[in-house]
Image (tube, rainbow over all chains, first blue to last red):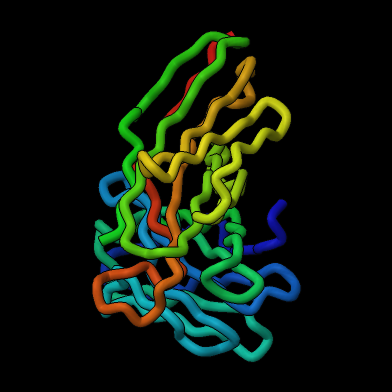
Length: 113
Length: 122
């Protein structure tokens, strides 16, 4: 158990809908990262937050957004969902930033029908 | 740009065999970190090791060992006396530290290889 929690574990929804994925980092970790894992793209970095502020952005679509709250938990919002958004979404956390090990949560499997 | 290549897509071995998973990386960062993660069939990503670019010493942890060679930009992972529980997808990843450089540096996020699926048969 990494100490990173993600909810829900599974999510099934329809095209055009909006969903919110939630992540709680390990106790004491200030950075939260979101990654998407799909069969065709592999594991791709989406976005990073550090102590409530956006720190780095990767291949995140404009339909996707994220935020980190004062209690350091984070939410990833996916809107206008398409079939191609079906993937495993991971949250990771680290103590601070780029020199630290990222510990991953169990992931949320999103299926868009 | 940063890149991680795991040329072996799938490897199948019989229990108790030794197996080496290859990882080759590309980076222009002067300081960087390399990682291995394991993804068992249950799906979670489990951290195995982190190594910084200044530490080229090999590391051994039980049946696992890692060989980092800066000269060949490789960070290979060997499992000795493999077991069925080692069956998983293994990912090599790279993280850079040169913030603000406008060449596509990772700025701390992980760049993953495509992964190597290891099947250990009894």
